[in-house]
Every structure is written in structure tokens, then in C-alpha cells.
Image (cartoon, rainbow over all chains, first blue to last red; front, side, top):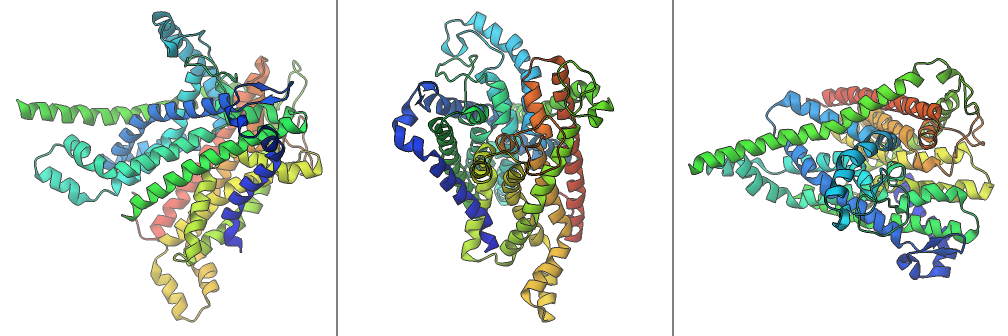
Length: 286
Length: 285
């Protein structure tokens, strides 16, 4: 009976959120997902800006973290210096242990001003007509959120990729070396292709983490529900709007709409995580 | 010529791997350095630990209420999650091949990845809304849901490290299966189980999102779990977003406390894990 605790908790989360969001689900129907206006005063709720912000920040963070994460994974799996490898391994684990809110305050007071001064302003001045660098640069922006998220998913990415790279049979490496390959040729042509599916799984897992991250993002993204192309403008995510507005939500429909945002987020991460786990697992079994 | 080019490229990518490792450690060192240097001032004052919040501008404010709150919240969540997690983990290790085991494991892994804000909403719907007021107990419930899968999976992992001979010896002596599982296997896996519990505690202590609409926060020192209660992450979150300099200092101080707490627990868990691996006859990798 007790063994069912985890599946029951998972099921209960989905059911309870769906039940709580029911007034909004029935009132707005599918146009809730496509609506671009979020106006609690006029009881008009659309989730699109939040879905946009969530998905965009998560994918950009993954793109930023992936090369570094795979690099670290290769270092941890293949480096011939055990001491250094151990130290880096501990460092990456501690990176995962630091609380989200600490990343948030660091991102807000240290990273955001630095990015603003050294990246946003110069790029904005040099390329005023490029859409992603356009608009009025802000300290709390999509860019800051992306960088913070990239740091936060790096441990997941490198730890899972490391295991996958380690699981590649040594015979493959030895065969490549025997043919006269250098280390890099072995890695690029043999090890990474063999680990491809697992690294993809690790990426999707990290994507799931990035989608659901709440507090750090809330503190640095600027919290404005807009859909616009600039990286330097503020945005908003599903998790952030729930964190910011839920305790202040007045009226049943407003609360229900926020819970529906939470439900959308849960469903999104559920699909992503189950897919990723099944992928990583098939790799393990091989 | 061609050979030289290949070797040069090899060297270049070997170098890049090192660069990646350094880039990965850079944020860790930056976060630690800034948290220590900014949190030092607040955290060095005795008032920081001896008082709770005071009106803005009056000196001597502290985060005592948040420290007490975090200890109480995490303590209650541990009481809820750790026993259940250990039992489920033992069950999973014992009935490894069972049809359900795969699903329970998958659900645990998915639960680890479920956004903590959603768990907060869940706890709100079940433990706050029916009673019409925020409470520390509901916060502890939310944290327990977060901790459960961590304890469960590490317990299972620790049990799998125990040499199979121990189990066979117990069964050969005619011990019933539950005694083998609980009295032999679990005892041999104790250091690993402690690791899991510590990691779960560290994770719960640093979580903010599940507490926002459950424990909610409190400006005063309370012990009663039926009342709203402050926690260190809530202090960091709320105070960091205010325009007042001394509240900002408090936020950094609270962040420093959290980081120190998490680092200590992490190092302790590493020590416990090393013992487990030594017991299992495997060196640390």
C-alpha cells in the first residue's frame, strides 16, 4: 500500500489541480491557452505570454548549457586525472545543491547589472535593428533568466551525460584507438554517437527542470506578460506568475485561472520528464 | 602535415574540455563569493540570531523567526517523508522485479522533476483552502511531497549496494523476509539511507516556492504549527525584492545561512556515502 505513495502523490497533484482549475477550464475553454491578454480586473485571462516565456527561456537555457554540460561530462568521464576529476565532480554537485532563491538574489544583484552593462547595452547600441537585441534593455530580462537557468540545469545535464558517456563500452574506444584515432576523433566519431540517445535524454530532463524552475526566474525575469522578440526585455513564465499573483488573487475565476496555469505547467513537465526518463532508461538497459 | 593537423585539433579539444570544466565551476565560485561577502555583515551581528523582524529603520532586526521556522518546517516534513520514503525504498529494492516496481520508480523520478510551485498549489488546495488559513503544517506537507522521492530512490540505491550474500545468509537461517529486509539489509544500508535523508533535508530547507501559499510567512516568532510561519528562503525572497538597504542586507545574510546549511549537510552526506561504499567493498570513484 505504502509503495504506491509516489504514484498516488503524482496522480493526486494532477487531479486536485484540475479540479481546482475547473471553473476556469469550463469558463474559458481552449481559448485560455491561446489568449494573449491577462487582465484580472476585466476577468480576461490568456496563458499564451506565460507559455511563450516559459518555453523560450527553457530552450535558450538548454542551448546555452548543453555545450558546457557535455564538455564537463566528457571531462568527468574521460579525464585521466582522478584528483581534478573528483574536485570538479564535487563542484558540479554543489552547484545543484545551492537553493534556487540564492541563485535568485545573486542573479538580481550581481548578474543582472553585469549583463546589462557588458552585454545588453553594447549589443543594443551596435545592432539596434536586430530584433533580439532591440527594444529598451532592462536589467531584469529574458537574457538574465536564461543565464541563471543555464547555470541551474548544468548539474543535471552533466551528471546524466557523464553516466551515459561512461556506459559506452570500452571496446568501442579501444577499437577506434587501434585504428589510429586521436582522443578527439574517438570521442567525436565513436563515443558521442554511441551516447547520443542518452545525451538527448539528459537534455530533455534538464529542459523539464528549466520549465518548472520558479523562484530564481521570478526574481530576475522582470515579470511582464509580453510576447516580443527582444532578449533584453522583461518576460514572464507560468511558474512566476503563479508565485507572484496567487496569494493576491481575488475572485474564484482569477484563482482558478492561476491554478490552470499551474496545471498547464505540470502537464508540460510531466510529458517532458516521462519522455526523458524513458529515453535515459532504454539507454541504461542496452 | 595531415597528422600534425589532427594532433593539433586533438590538443585543442582536450583544452576545450578543461575550459568547460572551469566555466562550470565559475558560477559556483561567484555565487559563493558574493553570498559570503554580502551576507557577512548581517550574519556577524548577534541581533541577527536573537531578534525577529522589526519595523523598517529600527536597528537590531533579525531572522530568528525564520531560523526557527525553517527548523520546525523541515523537521515536521522529515517526520512525514523520511519513514515513508524508507519503507517505499525498501519495498522497491526487495521486490525489484515486480511489475509495479518499474512504475513506482518512474513516478518517483517524475515527482522529483515536478515543479515545486505546483506542489505548493497542491498543498494549498488540500491543506490550506479547507481550513481557510495558512499554516506551517501545510508547508511541511508540501515539503514532504518534495522529500519523499529523494529518500525513496536513495534508500533503494543504498540497499542495492549491500552484498547479496548478507540477504542469502539471513534467508538461509530461516528469517522471514520482512526481518531480513528491515533488520539485516536496512541496517547494512544505514549510511546510504542517511545520505538520502540528508540530501532530502537540504533540498527541503532551500525550497521557497512550495511555502509561498502554505506556510506563507510571518513577521513574528511562532512555534504553533497551525499558524503561518516564516522560513529562511521566504526571508531571502521577500526582503531581496524590497528597496530598503537593511532588508537587503538581511536577505543576503539569510542566503548565507542557507548556503552554509546546505553545504554542511552536503558534506555530511558525502561522508555517510563514503562509509556506505566502504561497507559495500567498493572504493569511491
